Length: 77
Image 1: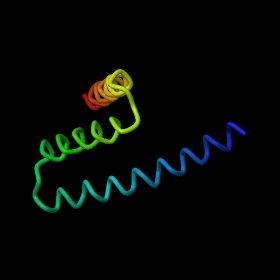
Image 2: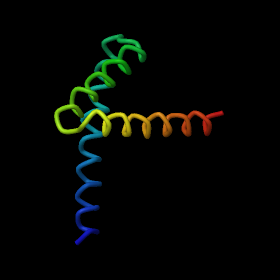
Image 3: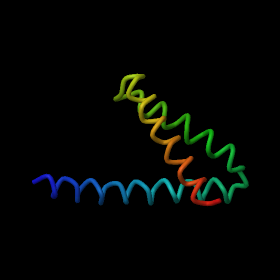
């Protein structure tokens, strides 16, 4: 049963990523800078997360995001 849930979660996540990727592409095509897009994404994430998460949960998730960004940057260099 857990495997089925994981598969559904993965499929849903891919759908969400596609929608977000298309929105980011559209923003870039509107000549918005990557810094503006990043700031807007972060604000939308915080607002979205705030509807269902506590401030501590949001902070923990943002810490994980920061860690993943640092790892990606380390791999790029």
